[in-house]
Amino acid sequence: MGSKRIITNYASPGEVALAGALMFRETAKESLEKQGRFLVALSGGSTPKGMFGILAQPPFQDAFDWAKCHLFWSDERSVPPDHADSNFKMAYDHLLTKVPIQHDQVHRMKGEAGDLGQAAREYQETIARVLGNTQGPASPPAFDLIYLGMGGDGHTASLFPHTTALKETQAWVVSNVVPKLNTTRLTFTYPLINSARKVVFLAAGKDKASPLARVLEGPPDCENYPSQGVQTVNGIVYWLIDQDAGGQLSPETLSNKGNA
Ligand code: 6PG
Image 1 (tube, helix red, strand yellow):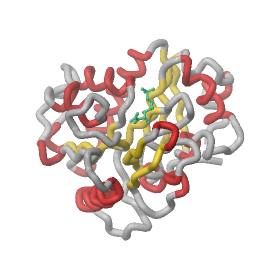
Image 2: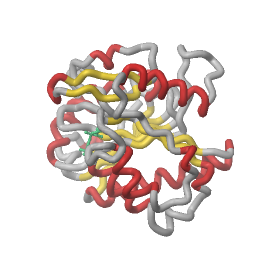
Image 3: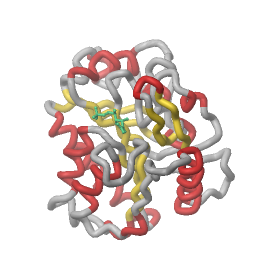
């Protein structure tokens, strides 16, 4: 039995993006009310791009105090921040330049670093400093909200099938060699992701249908379907999906019957 999971099926990728933006606004308001700040990690991918566009406009743009938000990233490609493939750049272009966020509260991963292992350790230190690390490295702090996507191969963040980061039980952020893309990426690990209060997957498109059915209904197999390893300890995992992505799920799964 895994963590608490809620699946919501939308008609189109645009509706998934809107639902993602509503989740951002609702969780920001909740967190600001409770603790005076909002700690969120963004992801790369196509659906978040639509979500950023929505968040950058009224009524989202001025719905809460952006100056009290801290933005992080759940993964990054090994490119400089002005590169077309940079996850930071996508958020910068579509969101950060359009909302009144404090620049020193935007914490990007240094994908351009020569030593990505060191960049991962520094990012973990930044997380510990900003979120607070009262219980030591063995117990990662909780983000209020972490956004994730799922690739057609079942990967999430930059936790790709059969890569070493899947086995990480200590570090919160690692550099992960991804042989099939002939690259190395920076990524949050399961221990950090699974400590979050809310994790939100945005998944749209037909290429997600088969892996999504394996992730949500198949036997345990994180090595082949890393998204399956996202099982929050105390939080909730939300799947915001469109009809195409949910095309191979059973009615029971879609109605959240039997979810932990
Ligand atoms: C990245 C990601 C990655 C992404 C998925 C889904 O840097 O590429 O963060 O994990 O979320 O590949 O991407 P799409 O939403 O574009 O399908």
